[in-house]
Image (cartoon, rainbow, N blue to C red; front, side, top):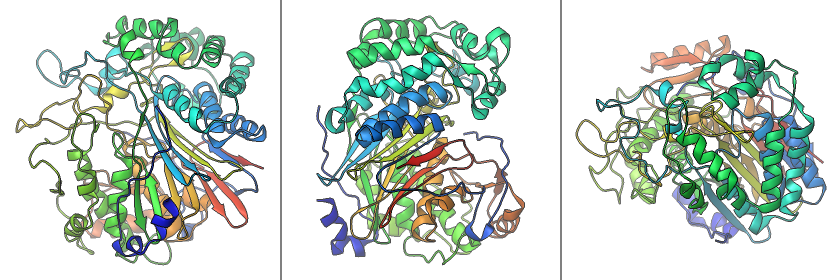
Length: 591
């Protein structure tokens, strides 16, 4: 059982161990906002929202209306799974730029009574007809990224509903159809366009949207303004069908036909997705990846996501170091960044869909391998260049250098219910508004652009994350659940942010465990890190000294807006504490 595994002495001494848990289931661009910097003594990147406390249950999500829907389900006696489903359905409506039933998701679910952690892969899949040359032009050159996104080429088979149905079958309490009522009511009656949604629409070119999507988001040729009451009767009708007939009505029948026709007849550039591709889709049970870190267990998603493995590698690399009693000293930031650079180099070389690629998860997390990688870190100086290592169990030279270009357009939901169960789901349609193609009131994803456009590197080696029919593109999404020193549930968290999701989760976990921040402080703490060679650091005069110090250590520091969206819940002796990242418009609500 998980608690006994966590408390055993081998976890306390090894530093980092990958754990295969019992599965309780059946069948890079960033935003442009600038932030205010307050309370630098807690390494704040934006002023924290008030800490929310509750005794019974809690939900934290990227939009208040969605969080209210989840809370309403909890008040009706629903489970964490039930609340998460209702929350996602409302997010499809009120935060359509980030996630929805036309996209994919990863779910971690903690079953308190069964003492089991469940992991479900609801990532999109490439159409069966897709080939490694999907994103190459007639001359064999990669298509421009901005041309590939708004097109039928980029649309994968959506996985959200299949994943939600699977978790409901094993952990739902309320009837499936009851979970659709809040979203159906909002779609019929309308909701007020939020400031973030309005600003996202205003930034986009209307001509990049298909006609149906353009008419919805740009009525009369004008972007929807903030505060406009927006109704979506087409989406309400779609939800009514799926509520009554289940996800099979999405993956087979008229909805599936309309999705396939929209992709194949896309006026911008057609894709190959078929009704059979939809009918063949399955959400998959995966083994979570759990890492021992300072007497805690930090659990995340395994491949096809890169999140759990990469977070685990970084934590394993930095655990022997003292990161200080307070955030964020330059010496600690340097160590974290160097560990991230090493882990991201391995990520680019080895991580992909395990159904298609032999992913050396155990090798990447092997303590001896991490010790070898850690020896590369100079505590006072940045490495000039970082390359992938050679972990145990990897086929040496089998994978080429990666050519993936990732974007952000994601959301995260955290729930803890009255029974102590926890639901963590990171969900996405990829870039803002996905492929900008709308069918029956919801947007379709552009997740296939998460594959490497280049299928082989310049040495002729195949790229692990190349396009293949039926394959799931590598993801950075990482819903995370953290267990405390005694083995009990401690934190539920996750964030949007494309490849920087891993950085955001790491700074939150380190803030909570190393620096003893509360969840509001940790979610608001300054965003920094590296997804390659450069160090990314939030704007703000409060961090000029940190930037200068890292630069003196040899780092290439690039200041930018890093719009994380952490939604975090902590389980304490007094009850629950929750917070939503102040950089977005989310909310934590509970009783």
